[in-house]
Amino acid sequence: MSDDLRARFLIVDDHQSIRKLCMTVGASLGFHCMEAESGEAALAYLETDSPDIIVADLMMPNMTGLEFLPRVKQILPRTEIAIMTGHGSIETAVQAMKLGAYDYITKPFRIEELKLLLQRMEEKVKLVAENQFLRDRVSAEMELNGIVGSSSKIQDVLRMVARLKDTRTPVLITGASGTGKELVARAIHYRGSFAKRPFVAVDCGSLVPTLIESELFGYEKGAFTGANKSKEGLFQAANGGTVFLDEIGELPLELQAKLLRVLQEKEVRPVGSNQKVKVDVRVIAATNRDLEMAYKEGTFRKDLYFRLNVVTLHLPALRERKSDIPTLVHYFLDKFAPGKMVTISAAAMKCMLQYEWPGNVRELENAIERAVALGSQDTLEVHDLPPTIREGQEPQLAIESLPGPVRSTVSNTDLEELERVTIQRVFEQVQGDKALAGKMLGISRATLYRKLKRYNIGMGKGASAAV
Image (cartoon, rainbow, N blue to C red; front, side):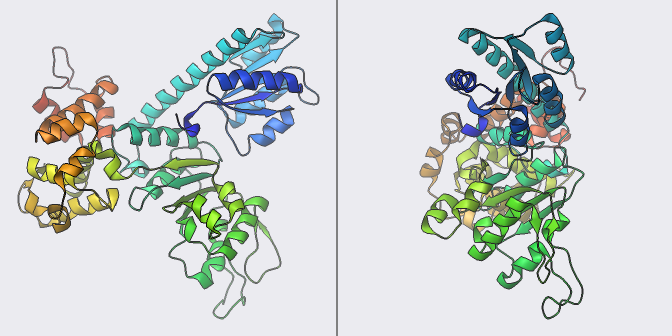
């Protein structure tokens, strides 16, 4: 499992031996383990990271576990906390539970006892996260449109979005052009507690080098020719919210140093000013470059790389999740031909499955928009697709790149079976919830009903037509 998907465990205790033991137990369970020697140190740590599970000692200098517990619950309401004490009593346990503790454990404790407690806490965290993930998909808003698919890779992305949406943790989104990096950044922002705050997207690759600093940090009147009045920069515009730095790898080295200072000091100095302005922003950066290789080659600052790369979220190329292509095709058909019930022929779908999609989802979207605009039939055929998709393919190679179950169906040209299997899998995953199935598949209610009826999915006795 990816490090970013592992449960994050924080032990808070003023005794190093206890912290070391708890981290050893947590590591044996596959957790990502962290430690803090006091409640104050732990709260400072929570400003930049968000553990899923916390075990805190009751009796610590300056701040007790019972004082620490409500502070954490205020910052991270979904984090599970257990209190550890050598002074255990029913009164302490009841008080801790009232303040939101998951459970408590008394010292000295057996390793198996701690392990069982951590496992139970992890199970609850996973259950709550999964329920929230499904609820988020049901109530998906405009900001999530386009993140469509049931493949394991795209579902992992959506789970990471659900985990990051309420945190201030810096996120680095990696992936090739056209995979939807800004879409994911907007989902992280708009699905959580930042939703009503500013979201400012900055395309670092399109900014004029001589104007980047003034665009990002603002400028004072008279700072340069044409500066007839003061103007706040994009960081100030995003104050309290999120700034999305797209294609961060294109930022010149000189500006990288200034950006690093802004992130460290949480203040900007407008061009031509001697005064610094405080800014409080969450930073999400994106790149299609290998930044680790870039800093080793000296074209990207190492310290900035590690400042941004707290959590990495990688978006798969479309060729790595070809089983999602039918779902995406129907999603874009509904988008560009709403209410027209336009479909796609098996031959055209096969053609799209065999193509390698160097432009990823953006290229697929453009292809469907073009086909809908130029096609004259209710069914899109191969000749409606762009020439690059129709010609110069290596069908057998493309088929081999598909997952096993998908490859076997495509090699038999049974594309309807591929669609049926995809819809069946999603329908079973959501336990027959048609509204949720439609959201996850990215298709309209009418399209979903037509396909459920066509493939006889969920149409058994007692099946409800209500959504």
